[in-house]
Length: 441
Figure 1 (spheres, one colour):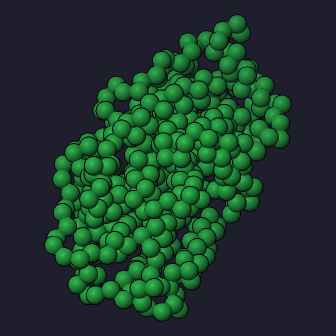
Figure 2 (cartoon, rainbow, N blue to C red; figure 1 turned 60 degrees about the vertical axis):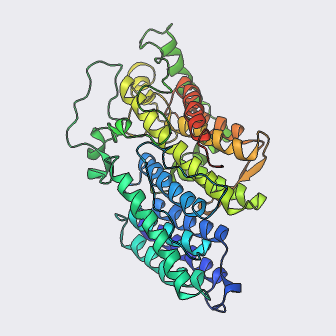
Figure 3 (cartoon, rainbow, N blue to C red; figure 1 turned 60 degrees about the horizontal axis):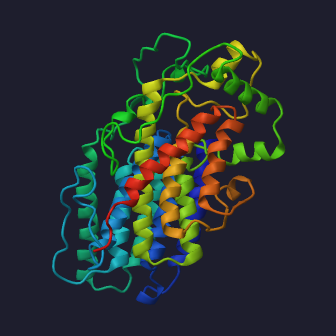
């Protein structure tokens, strides 16, 4: 059922895209989409692919967004004198292809780069996703190329594809091309002691944690190793006068006396895999909305998407390293054992350790980037879940949205307050490294 629902969403969006950009339009340059429209169209397809590609849990989705962001950025930057390459700035990315002499079309080079990048980083999507990618290449790309000289078409598309091939070779070095068994290890030994993580699901696959070695991945901009580390969580204790017990009691009390607003917040930010674009995709959607609101030119859009992809990808790597360093028990396990055996959180507890909150880390990182581009008081309505039946939520700033995203995990009953608060701190640290990338000469 999920696949059929998501398939219909993708097909509906593709139909709208083709109608807007050339299905039935005159095949001349005046009907061609701008580079901004190409970027928007390609990212909207990717967001739908994330929704119905089974292995695209939030960490995996963040990786794809980072590589796509780099490819889109370089496709545009390579044709401008005022933009600097990310080669030499991102870890192990030493060189990228140079453009051959001759004329290029920027929209077409960007389309070819993102088309081949989507096929590369979603090569394991299901039949519906494969059909959607093929359909877009067959119907959308010819509109982008309409009216252009044959040599410009060949040169622009060849460069876009060569760029993806080079970034793909670089991506191979992070060791994450294959996600076996949905990301759950075949063998994993749980740590001894009641303070450590225990499975919170009856599903057989989830008796081991998701992607336990994700924290060993190569980062993009954040220095490798012990960077953006967090203080240890509160000391584990079952004593009723301990901080740990009081923090767990807060989670239970909120669950028992939730307001309608707290429920709405928890559900709005849940962003579950296969039911949404995932948490990093949520921030990508907000970046698109804000860019459209201000009608940003393509050079600023690709800069934003590259930094946002890098920030969220690095945030998951950094967060996962901390999660499995501390391997802390989830509120669900602790509360049922020591406070309330009938405790039932509003949302499902994810299958990995508690500290810090990944939602919070990646929200802090994303907001650092978004605030850099749009300012500290950029007010907006988040319409990311309108198609899913959830009304827009208004925010006075991106920082306010990140704070709400973090607290949503407390309201949902799956994180302690300090896991959310410290997660935001870690995320802001990661975001500073993405913001430090030099994109202008």
